[in-house]
Structures are given as structure tokens and as C-alpha cells.
Length: 246
Image (cartoon, rainbow, N blue to C red; front, top):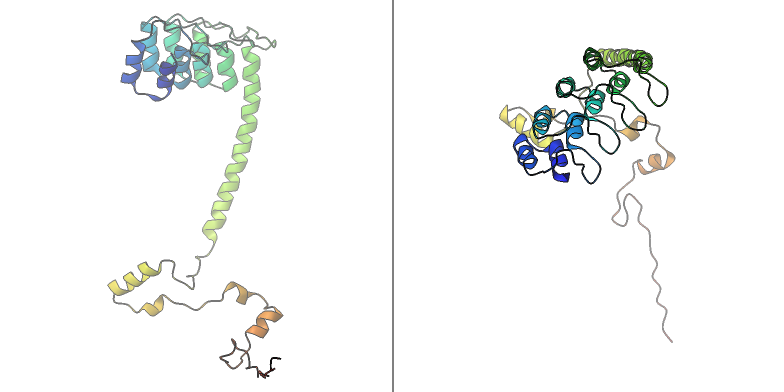
């Protein structure tokens, strides 16, 4: 079952069909407590889910966490899988896990309106309360408030991005840098167009020239005669003395 659950997430349909034919119980759980049908509902594999139902998988068999396939599909917003499970006889008001949440509660919490409408058409009870005493209607109202806040945040961010984009668009075109960005390419282009390579080199101020130089820089940059005994330093006369050894 471990290989089947993993292949549902990553493998192609032919590989999954081959593994389905090798399992004895399609309702069995993997070593980590995952159900093949719930995994299909979570990742949106309608093609595999239909074949598991044909192989005898129960639409209401939960995984270790108590999540049913219908609840997983409702939470993920996979409307075709929700309709397929309802057609297969899944209980729309099945309360899952310790939270006793129904598929409609999961859909309302996630804000999937089309899934909520499909579950309501299938007879889901919007007044059924979970373990915390909250119904699907209460979760939908909380999601509406959260969605309004998120919309306001996204609208503010969108205006900031548009304002910044307009400011960048209004900026002048940057000047050509004083050095070649791609020296080999610039030389090849000059030779191809039979132009002078002098256009590649342009004088420009470097970073340290844009600031006030320090005293050390001023001293080292002053004009001085060259000496072979030291870089830009005057020669030093050395007096050699011979001290006889006893």
C-alpha cells in the first residue's frame, strides 16, 4: 500500500493502475496511516479515484487522522472529485476526526464556494456543529471576514507595486558605464561592424574619486620621482662598515 499511495502522488496513470491490480484490500492503510482514496481526493487524481471505487474502495473509509475522502476533496477544492464521491454514496454529513468536522465545514473554512454549493445540493446540513460548537455557517462567516481583510491587504500591496512600477518607469535611462560589460562581445561587435574600439573605453570616476580622499591617499598620489630602490621613494644612502672578527 505504501508504493500505491506514493505513486498516486507522483506516478503516471498506467503505473498506478498496475499497482491497484496487485493490492488485495483497496481500503487498507499505508504504514504512515494514509488511505489511497483519501490521497487521491487530496491531490486531485480523479482518474485514479474512479478506478479505486471500481476496485471496491469505500468512499467513507477515513485515514488515521480521521479525514475522509469527501472531506479531503472539499478542503482542497476539487469539485469533480466531490461530485464523484457523492455519486458513489459518500455520506455528506460524516463528521471526521476529533474535530467532528464535516465536508461542508472544510469547504467553508477553505472558502470553496462551488464545493459548498454542491454539498448543499447533495443535502449537507449547514447547521451541524463540530466538536467546538461551530457550524459550517459560522466557519463561512469567519472566512468571509478573513477574505475581506486579505482582499484589503492585496489591494494595498497592488497599489504599492503599481506606484513603484510607475516611479521606475519615470526614471531616466541610466548612463553607459565607463567600462565594457562584456569585453569580448564588444570587441567582436566592433570588428564585425568595422568600428573603432575606442568607443568601448570611456573615462569615468571611480568610487574613491567620488569621495574626499584621505590623507594617506593624497600622500601616495602626489608626484614624486621614481627610484629603483623603492616605489616612488628617494634613494637611501647606505654606509657599509667592516668590523674585523677577533
